[in-house]
Image 1 (cartoon, rainbow, N blue to C red):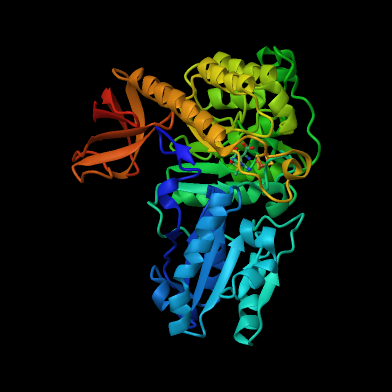
Image 2: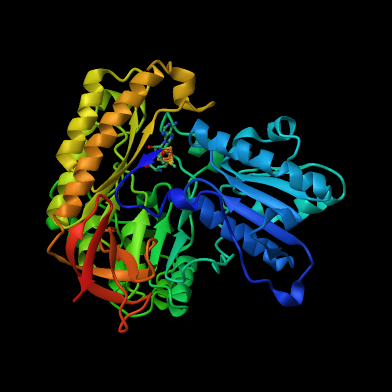
Length: 512
Ligand code: SAM
Ligand code: SF4
């Protein structure tokens, strides 16, 4: 993967392989140490917190050193072949720990576990437990089975599991930003993607538990939540929604891609206290725009972000909700994948180039100051030079602030693997990727340059990576901003920063 400019937190390269370390529940200590590291997207990092929470309840303590662990878990990603290879290489490094401590339990969690199932046990002799993303509640039993001398597998996918009642522990976070999963799985079946097979059917988490978790986070000092799902805009809870009269007749309906919403829920949004509103609205349905509004209303000092939006689902209602609330950040991740309609159809993305442009135009019209980022795949099956040029011209049209860019990697079992030949030579995929990356570099830089001389509201996250004399934090648009440390402000607070220059990835300025 190549990523540029603003280091996005949803797939944060610098966190790959990070170990989670938490406080032990002293009363329950069972004397065993858990080492857990995570790969892939933010959903996996969020899941590792759920896993740790389940095992902490069993009396485990966490360690950042796998050499002293009694249980090693590796939470895996299957999205591209190289993500899987990385996990296999990492497993080799655990071999010595197992030789030293034969009682050590090694478990593989997440997407790769789900994809390979018990085959994993045959391929990697070191592994004792294989657990899919919907089976984490079963972990204590599975570890017991291994303690009894067996290997253990649970890769059952669920239509209901959202772990809504498990509050994830986040003690090694910065105490300011948190990810909150609002849904699991994906029903979209993009032909290149393994996620529907590894994470199962799409299901939304109940809004009360989401509001409660976000409120608790705010009360504990967190100031930013990112609502997470593979496809957040298709979030839906409860009864089918009715069209919202104000929007269906008003400005939001201009292009007919309108939002289902529920007036009852929106009118509750006028009150204070998300939980009480939800209690009253228990029979009403909640769509993504409603949920976004409920979270925004928890407190104006709580910033709200979300990821990922699918172009087929992002409605004007969501855009108007972002516009209405200052604390919903003006930043949308809207993966395009390709700018060519024929390729998009083969990818089963269910939108074409014109539809995508229509959504971009709607964002620019409704929230002109909004930053937009994307995902691009180069060299998908049968992509022609002309198709590739369409992707480049889409990048010129949108001028993305940031992009994740990938070469197509065929994944076993996906629709594309079954239907289409992976017929673009690696050298061509790579060359196209280079061109896409070069173009994005240009736009990432020019988008940052355009902010020189502006004042940005920044939530301070901590010291900058390079110097303890500087703080860093993100602007509303999700740009990283660096500025000198001062006595009057500290991490967790908002400051206004006058930007006086930019690098290719960062805005630099001073507090005004
Ligand atoms: N649900 C999100 C969406 O639809 O936009 C993205 C989920 S996926 C975890 C993140 C990105 O990985 C995708 O947007 C796509 O660009 C990339 N990706 C997925 N499968 C891929 C494959 N087989 N080869 C290359 N890139 C892939
Ligand atoms: Fe994969 Fe498509 Fe679902 Fe995203 S929307 S997770 S790319 S199937």
